[in-house]
Length: 368
Image (cartoon, rainbow, N blue to C red; front, top):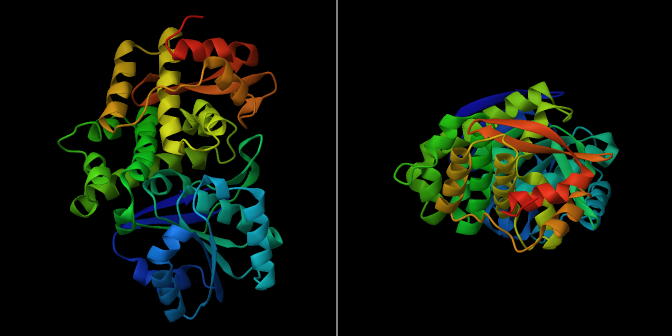
C-alpha cells in the first residue's frame, strides 16, 4: 500500500492499495474514532459496495447509516445537499461522528460540502470509486454543488481526514467513466510531470489504456503508481496554495472551457470528456499566442485520440465565451486561463473578458 501525506489546513493521509475495502472499518476506527458513520453514496455504487463497507464499519463498532441518492451530475444540486443535511440532523449526528463519501466526484463533492456545513464541520473520509475521483477530486478539499448559473458555484474548501483509495473498486467501471479519469491523469502529466505523461501515452505499456477497455485486474500495481503520482502532484500544489490564490489554479487546465461545455450541455457531456475538449482548445490557443510549440499540441491531441477522448465541440466560440463568464475562476473583468508551455509545464494568463471569445475561436481553429 502506498501513502501520500497531505499537509494543508488539516494533515491527512491518502492510502492507495487494492482489495482492502473489507478492512476499512478497523482502519477508520484506529485513525479517526467516532461512534456513528454516515455513508453517502449513489444508487449504483450502493448496490456494489455499500453493504461490504457497512459490515466492515459495524465490525469495528460503528453505528452505520446510509444515505443514497440518484447517480449522476444532475443530483449535484442544492436539493440533494439540503436533503443530506436534514438526514444528518434527523439522525442526530454530532461533531465526533464521521461522514464517508463512497463514490465518484459527485458523491465526494456533495458529501464533503454537507460535512463542512453541518454543525460547522463533521469529520470526513473519501473513498473514491472512480478513476477521476482517485486521481483528483477526492484529494485537496474542494467541495461544492452546482447552481443553474454554473458548476461548483456553491461550496467550500474542506479537507478530508482520510482518503482510502482501493483500486479494486475501479474494476466495475464502464469504459466511458474510466476515460473521464484518464482525462484528469493526462492533465496532471501536462501541467507538472512529463514522465507521467509519457508513461501513459504508449499503447503497449499504459495500464490506463488497457484498464478502461479491458480489465483493471491485470494492471493493479502500475495503476496504483499512476494514481500515486497524480496525488503527489496535487498534494504538492495544494500544500503550497490550498485556497487557490496562485499555483493551485494550474489544476484548472482544460476546466474553464470544460465547465462551459458541461453547463451548455446541461451536464450530458461528462466532466472528463469536457475537460479533454477544454485542454485541446486551450492548447491550440496557447500555440496561437506563441506560448507553446506545435509539438506540444500534437502530443496532447495524439494522447486524447489514443484514449478515445474528444478534442472538438459543436458549441461555437460565442456560446462558450458566454458560459465562461459564469465560471468561478472569473475575477472581475478578467478570467485566469491555463496554457501549456510544454508537456510538464503550464502557465497562468489573465485574459480580459472582452478577449475570451476571440481566444476561444482561435483555440477552435478559427481566426481572431
